[in-house]
Image 1 (cartoon, rainbow, N blue to C red):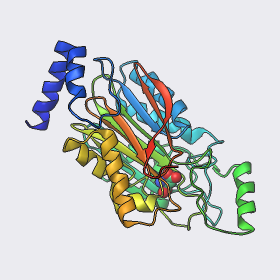
Image 2 (image 1 turned 45 degrees about the vertical axis):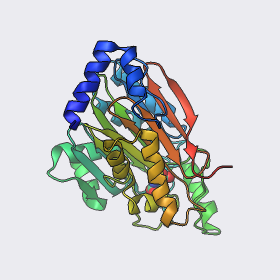
Image 3 (image 1 turned 90 degrees about the vertical axis):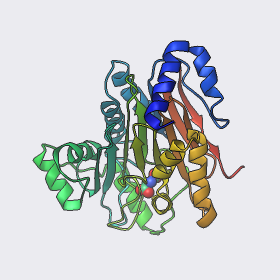
Length: 328
Ligand code: ASP
């Protein structure tokens, strides 16, 4: 059965047989972590603890019958604007030269994509990425060009290095040791993936990247297929953690393709993690994935424990730890 017909078949089952159909669907994959409990679509997944607030902002839009694209952008923007967050937007950790550089990307239900990387002095890279998607013939703008485009679009320049982050950076400079810390509190990229009440999928991913990275370094977060991938027929996935490992395995694309072949979101995330640990030295590394599919199932998996992800649906509003490859 092709994907369109399969989606149609599941939708028909849902709408015709309600809970009974849910039971049939539940047996479709032995790896299903969880599933939609109502027949009405609507689901948001976000990375880390800051995902709870991001989900709330996204859900406000979804529950009013808004588009998943608007929802994921709103969720990401909330995190970008929070000066307490050390890994996204305002207040994000700088690179080793003391400069905050931001990466972000966004994808909609039509397979459109927009991305910015190495962007400076603009608080909402996710919205610039959306403008790249909607207002240009390109997918990705970087550095000065991305900033110039943002200014043309009406964004304004502001200093993103807060006093607190500047002090931490000066402290770091005393030793200048580059050691990304695994799972520290208040850490990491926000990835938001959502299905709206019309059943459509979108995703957003935004970050200041690894703290004290080399000047010019770009991670996985703005790379379509690495930090984020959405296919409205199948599902959506987002990544957080050591971007180099995610990029080398096209992590989010891999997850969506495995879901296309029938893997549950949880199993697909696990397989993407296994792809990393098989070939790369993962001892000092954390990578985590979240995924949702068209049927409203969700899942997550990380290399090591300590990765929480936030879930919001008609029935759920929770932060829960993902399963992990390394057991402690
Ligand atoms: N994935 C991000 C990067 O490599 C960092 C993170 O999620 O912590 O830039």
